[in-house]
Amino acid sequence: MKFNEMISAIDTHTGGEPTRIILSGIPRLYGKTVREKRDYFKENFDYIRKRLTYEPRGFAGMLCAALIPPEDESADYGVFYFDDVQYLDMCGHATIGVGNALAELGLVHPNNSSNITLETPAGLVRVENEIDDGEVLSTSIYNVDSYIIQNDIEIELDEVGKIQVDVSYGGNYFAIVKADDFDIDIIPENIRKIKEWSKTIRRVTSEQLKDKNININLVQWFHPSNREGIDTKCIHSSGSGAPDRSPGGTGTSAKLATLYSKGLLDVNESFVQEGVVGGVFVSKITGIRKENGIDYISTKITSNAYITAFHKFVFDSRDYLRDGFFIE
Image 1 (cartoon, rainbow, N blue to C red):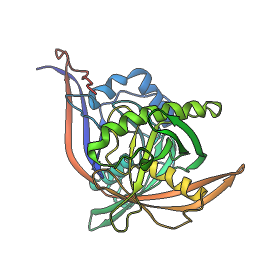
Image 2: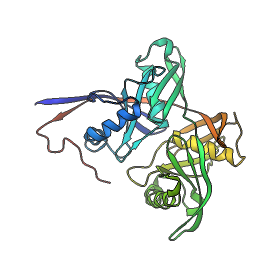
Image 3: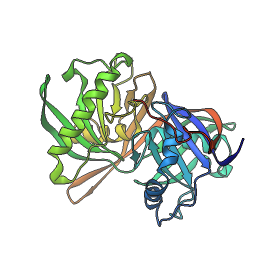
Image 4: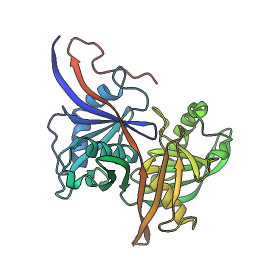
């Protein structure tokens, strides 16, 4: 046995969606911001993404959060995100997982474990842990500002006809659609259909917004929840890889911006979403900042994350599948 590379990681899940938190093993990254360092990683070390998210070490739905030193002096850590398909500027469920793990494992000073600041490619995100006797009871994130791109965009799809799509930003760009327009219930049995439609919706909606240079990252599907105290049931899909099992953090922020713009939600009013496997995110708008005629929405999202595994990944140079394989 001969290994010349090793990566240490912790796995968590938030609402059923996994996060593989990389602690060490990434080569030195160059850049003046976490975004620049993420881009350097993408250009030079994308094989690490594949090794950790592809089989046999990864699986459908695996998302990684790489912890690195921050460049912003006000941040405790830098973090960037990737899955088996793409790199994301921000990821809410993963940030909740990171915040929980940093506190639970003592990776931040005890005096700071309740309030952690992370530098992400999208900007600074504050994490607030509710802690009792050393145990994290819940984790909240104060996300980067969300805002509306355009509401009620009309697109036409084969077999469905004309539907309306809302587009907003919550750390990523989202096209938000009503599942009822497709006569689809958000249940595991329909994930394949949702994924197939999401690829088309992303493409068609991005084409409509090409003059604004907007490229849709994910499609958010929703319909009313049948659980008491929960407003909607939702799922997010890029059209490739595995749809999100959690209610989606950046998607929830984007949804709050949409609801506010339509007069359906006010500041400090609670909004609760559930994901496809029953995880719940509790959210609210914490403030509004108007700039150049645009309402920038500050949001808070609260949920729970749980540590599920500790890893030491090794890579044997003789292994013809050391860089993994992807079967969709």
